[in-house]
Amino acid sequence: MDGSEGNLPCASSSLPLPLPVLAASSDAGVGDLDVSSSSWAAALLLECARAMDARDGRRARRLMWTLNELSSPYGDGEQKLASFFLQGLFARATCSGPRTLGALAEASLRNRASFECTRRTALRFQELSPWSPFGHVAANAAILDSFYSSSSSAAAAAALSSLHIIDLSNTFCTQWPTLLEALATRASDADTPRVAITTVVVSASAVQEEAMREVGRRMERFARLMGVPFRFDAVHHPAGRDLSDLDLDRLVREGGGGGGGFLAVNCVNSLRGVPAVGRRRDALLAAFRRLDPMIVTVVEEEAELSMEGEEEEEPQGEAFLKLFRSSLGFFSAYLESLEESFPRASEERLSLERAAGRAVVDLVACPAAASAERRDTGARWSRRMRAAGFEPLEFSDDATDDLRALLRRYRDGWSMRAGAAGAFLAWREKPVVWASAWKPAATTTRE
Image: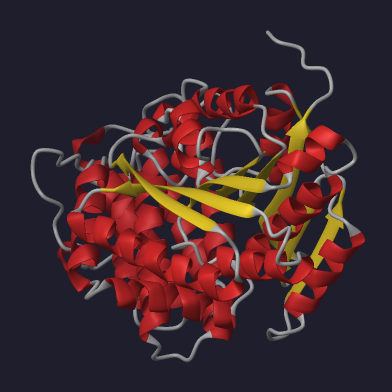
């Protein structure tokens, strides 16, 4: 349509205006949509996204005004979903996505009083929801099974004297105490393996670096308590650069005490931080293959938020609407699971919800080349892993038993299924987390 009047403004030269400026007009209603249904937020948001994509500025503004009236970051699940996605749509309409995301991230750093506060949120999340522990338990079980099953030859038995893990994750090493405890339990004092963990942290401040030093001190104390010879290294990767820039060979040489031994690569919710453009994800997986590790564990949230063949700019047209629908489905399930797991006034829950709000702005209003939130499906990651020269390792019966036992600790609504393609955690039958294990393929076809 024509439009100076119809099109939404693109105020890229100014800071985004607060949402209340979406003033009502006499025809601000959206009478063709039902705002009384239990899932009103998704219906209104998707209609608003369609109007924006069609450059129907009049309808988009009316929908945004209605959403602004109904939404609240402190309300129920529907109100929060509406609030977070409205923020993303407004940033997209005003071409201020990266700037809005930067302001939200800066506010988050100011509100995060201490490392203890951040770690407490992560631990509380793990206590009340299996969302994070599911991947930890699956990855640890796969690493241990592979480590102990590799003693079929003399050379492999010698490798059992040491275990080096390249850890690409963002959970403050909360995954590793249970692995150290399991190693201590299964080994005698004479054959307890040496363990080295090299954790890569994307950091932008001295506070984050000090936080990881404290994590290292705590890990070392725990390892001594367990009687496990232990080394911990935190490698700080500059903010603004993704993991495809890592010098993995140096991490192996320096972190593992000169190389040798059993090498594992552990990726927990980290691969999505590599932009889904320019085959950078493929390049990182190919770099893993060149290390020739004994095992690579991959845990990612299950959602199709990365469009194949996506360009560096913001997606448009049907590609944008598909991304928007998938984002709505994923974050609706995530916020619902938080609502069911946490007390209503929980500070930890609010912190996790704010992080979800930032992710929504990233997805809806930022170009793909700058995005750190483009989640992908297990099926697509599997294709990439196979193309890089890996083959899947199926989880053992003991591992799947451990995962089922884990879910029994939490409220109803969680389920899982496991097979050759990995293990999926589901919330109310919707898969939300995918865990997998891989080894170098016996024969690798190089392009």
